Structures are given as C-alpha cells and as structure tokens.
Image 1 (cartoon, helix red, strand yellow):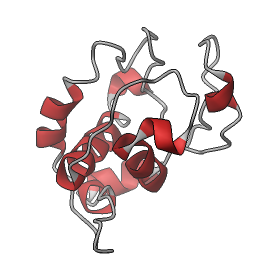
Image 2: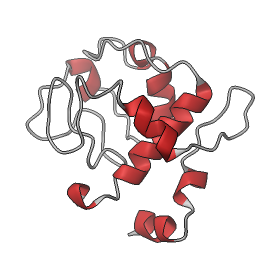
Image 3: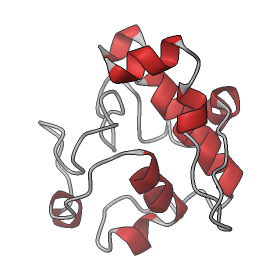
Length: 131
C-alpha cells in the first residue's frame, strides 16, 4: 500500500535512486531501466521463474526465499532483503556481494544504469500482473 501511495503521487522514481559512488543519490528513470532490463530477460521475467527467479514481489522479499525456486545455498543463506540499497550493491557485483551465488552475470557497473534498472523494477512491482 505504501508503494502504491508513493506511485500515485509520482514519488516512487525519486525514492528508487541508487547511491552514487560519491555518496549522493541518483534518480532512476524507469523508461531507461526497461531497456536495461532487456539484459535480464534471458534468465528472469516478472511473472514466472526461468533460469532465475521471477521478479514480481522482489522488493521486500528475502533473498533466496521465492517458493519453488532452486536457489544456491549462498543465496538462501545470505539474509539479504531486497530493497533499493541491497539491489544496488548486488547488481553492481553479484559474485562479490554473495560469493557462491549461481547468478553468474558480471553486474551492471554504471551507477546511473543501476539506478534506472532499480526504478524500473520498483515501478513494475506495482503493475497488475504483480499483485
């Protein structure tokens, strides 16, 4: 409900920014993030599991906890909860943040691209197919 309220006031993009390396906050652009998400679709969708788990319900979910998906032990034991900050860290370098994860993607190195991707993931989490 909180995210729905924020989205209705157009605030979700402002809150979905990822920390910049200089300590500031980057504002994510969900439209730009949609193009970046194209890199993810080989393994992920929003509504069903593929090689990687589905992304509906990602925000606020404990890493490695989506029912029915066969996560690595490292992911299940990570104790991360996905929010904008943990996603920012993980997406920058998945293998560094969770050594032993089966997600072998090298990461999204560009700060702005990560902010855009996180803004898109946040926005899509509010879509009807994710309810």
